[in-house]
Amino acid sequence: MIKNLYTSKQKKNVIEQKIAKQIVENSDLLSTLNDKSYAVAMQVGELYEAAGDLSKAEYAYYIATNKAPNGKYLSHLKLTLMLIAQDKIDDAEKTIASVVDMNNLSLIRFKTRAFIVLGDKFYSENKYLKAAEAFEKANYYYKRLAKVDKQVNESIRQRLVQAYIDTATVLIKNGYNSDAARFLKKALKYEPNNLTIQYRLAIVYADLDPIVSVQYFEPLISKIPQEIDRHIFSNVLIKAANIKEIEGDLTKAKYYRYKIHSLDIYAQNKVIYKEDVEVFLKKFSIKKILFTYKLKSSYTIKNISSQDIKKMSADFVLRHGDKVRETVTIKNCVSNRKPLFSNGGEIDDINVIFSKNIFTKREIEQYYIDIYLYKEPDYKTLVGSFKVPMKSVNQKSSIFGSPHL
Image 1 (spheres, helix red, strand yellow):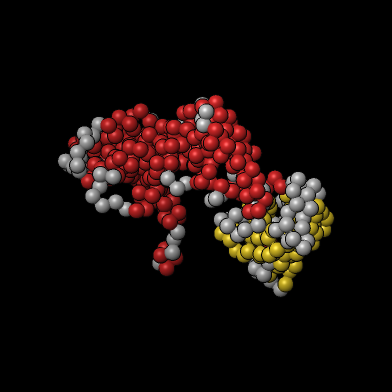
Image 2: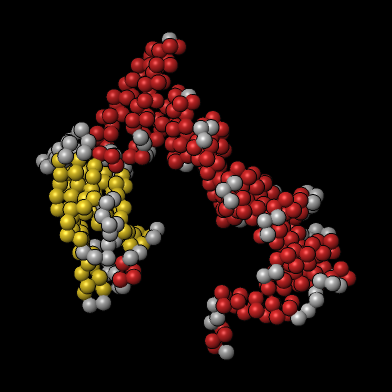
């Protein structure tokens, strides 16, 4: 009895499936279903669904829709889900459309859920635009509820944004930048403060309309300068300046050319760019102490840019999946007194000791170390990420090239 109380949900589902299969295999539940009530038709549908026979479940739910009381749409939802699960998308859309719109809470919930599931199906098949259209309909119906759940509302919004972003990505790959910009703007409507979307729009407009591109680029320089491709931005500024010169607006042209110069100064004072440095793992040791493991590493950082770096700190972040377990900060590993010279200058032996206790070797396999370099804490640049090696390393190797990484 105690064991049954602790049966996992998965085991419970398996047991229910076995029971359902035994019932439907020894019964002819569909032959007289037209003569049964709505409640019976729903129960039969749920039995076949539990047994994994989606086709017969679909039929039972179809019968239930014809017997459903006014204002009740659970059978329509169940039928829609069975149709989608069997890739009968046209029939699913017809089922959703068959119910006339009205201000009925049950109907609104049905259509919201149905369009979310339909959108998820399209998204799983990489049909991002059709997914976005379905999520838009889900959003439309959900907004008609007098009281909305913040979590559901956020879930729909995130789906919409991602579907529009992925639609734009496909269009960009195929050279349709103008259409891509249109869908990125739709995504931005739902997430107006999303800096990644703003940056993508800046890149898309680099060729379409450099003036508009500058408008998207400019605010990002003070927010995420470490993620901005300053070479693209510089080219956009040159194009924008040339356009303004042709139009006779010499003041604006001069402003754009000045921005190119100030961009270089800003980067030199504020930002470490990924392409400016190389990070090498020099040593890595895993020390077992009783039943736990300690990690210790040593790094070399090389300046491959054409400018001296006179200010830099580093964060070494130990993470497990998306969860940060520990951060080791090395402040001022580069300074005016010990600069990192251009074109090959190196700082050696940055030693990092993690205090985190790792209990098993299997656990070690799931850990990563992310390396962030920065001149100012607000502008940290991820310059490398590698999986914790299972064996000790005692040689200088690029964090991107080691066979252990």
